[in-house]
Length: 316
Image (cartoon, rainbow, N blue to C red; front, top):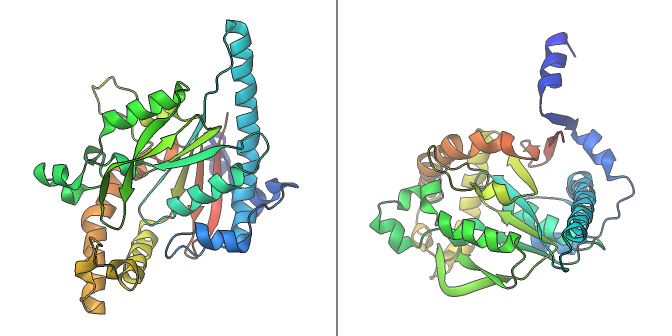
């Protein structure tokens, strides 16, 4: 390492690890996830392996278990100081990153691993997709081509939801989104009832408020956050590959919003997927998502084979 690299590293707010260095931090953490369970947890076109879970997610689950235990101890000490009764405040973890980077798979794996630690038996997962404005509202506002951009969400409802959860309220409802019909499902909710850990997954969960607005950030409610990173060119390839695979599976359901793409030729479908990626998802990534990366507690950087190659953990 040359002197300039040492200087840059010394000024960095992150501890940086190679894959091998991070994997060694697993220590004696047992693998509590089977290969069959992993098949059920991974998303379309996300070829995650048991080895990846062992190298990346077991060390992370170990770290989070330590952080959660410390936070629980601090909360109990504060309660004793205040003379307050019981209660429980969930530890909230945000998971951010681009479309097609693997947020859903990572979030489900973390949910499963953390729920098997003795001090965090109740772990729940929500996605911010449920807080998107309904398609009818997006169409009325001319925002359908900006779906996933910050302005396409009901930000006030999301902040209200997180505020209630962080206040330790019982039975807080989160709206549900259907990727099949590509819309929020009316009158259906997921109930979040004082879990030990709540994982909040979404594109823009690390996004700050607009300049001049004095409202809280979504990330103000997070105790820890993970940003899944990859080169935009790789993400574009993964998006197109996923689109093509879904075209042969989920898109064939007549109820699917994307059923209209089933009859396209392979070349037409690839061109359509690339157009959607470049016109919507890449623009959102460059304008709104990448700028939030270094607000994360942990950055997991993936390479061409979908494996995490580098890890950056924010210094305390």
